[in-house]
Amino acid sequence: MEKAYRIKKNRDFQLIYRKGKSVANRQFVIYMRENPECDHFRLGISVSKKLGNAVVRNRIKRSIRECFKVHKHNLHSKDIIVIARFPANKMSVNEIQKSLEHVLKIARLFNKKI
Image 1 (cartoon, rainbow, N blue to C red):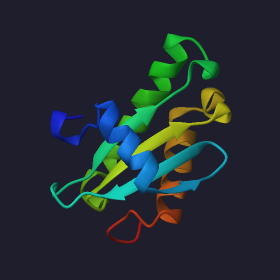
Image 2: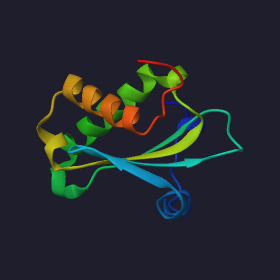
Image 3: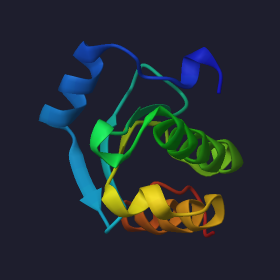
Image 4: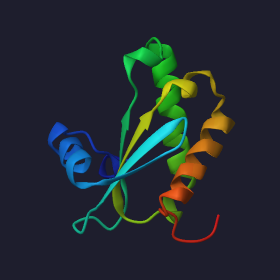
C-alpha cells in the first residue's frame, strides 16, 4: 500500500481512538474518523503479540492490507484503524476478507453496494 494510505504516527492513532467511532465483530474492531485534509482513506493496523509470533501477525496484516487494496476505490475518505482480535489468527485470507467486508458494511464505509 502506498505511503499516503498509511497511518503510522502514534499521535494519529491516539486522535482516532479518542475522537473516532468504533464498530466491531468477533474478529476485528474498526475505529474511524473523518479526515477533511485527505481525499482518500488512510489505514492503520494493530495486531497484538497475544495473537501469535511475528509470522502469524505479519500474515494477518498482509491479509488486511490485501482486503483494503481490493476495495481501495469503494471506501469513503476516512482514517481507519483495524484491530485484529484473537479468532483472526486461525483464519485463512478469504475468511479474513469476508469478516472485514462484514465489519466495513456495518460501519458504512463503502461508497456503493458490495
